[in-house]
Length: 248
Image 1 (cartoon, helix red, strand yellow):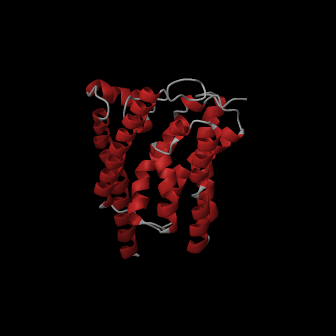
Image 2 (image 1 turned 135 degrees about the horizontal axis):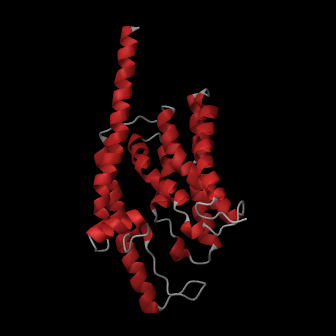
Image 3 (image 1 turned 30 degrees about the horizontal axis):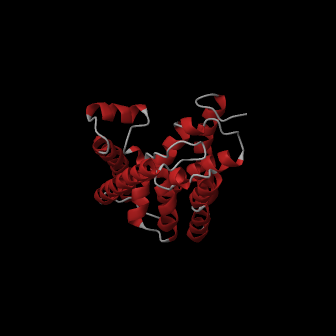
């Protein structure tokens, strides 16, 4: 049985993504902060294991470098957890969206056989890359800080810019030297989709600004709205709790 896209199996795995992270929250909720920290710290290496698996399994390392947003998340996540980094924890609230999109928009992985190693090393690390940054906040291991919005945007766009130049260099190098993948095709990469859009939302941005790299800057207002909603909600909930505590 293959994973598929928006079939019954795929929809169940999307629901399971939420269920697994909620279950992990309730398992850890009444544990000591040290236990929470260690468990999340160990689980945070799942994405690193997936990166190694992809580099080894597919026989084309240039096409599986850890340069997509979810891969960057996987690299940074252990540092965010083990060092309880406020800045990195808040950054990953944005970067974890890459893991969510990887599960929902799974076109390139839809033919994976359910519970095969390729599926396991794709699905479960993404589940944890999505959930752990949120769990860190919910469990109080890291605090939500609105002031981190600026650093989050700067780090994200700086990473995107660097990766765009890496895309250009790899593509030019492979085209010039005839470097091919196991299928015999000239390797051309599109990490973080800086060269061409890869989903309907990015295609909309590309129609508005039809230029590689630059079109992605239209994501910034979306990011500001997304993070603004999180921080404003947290602010009002916290204020409401304090008001109730003051009256008690």
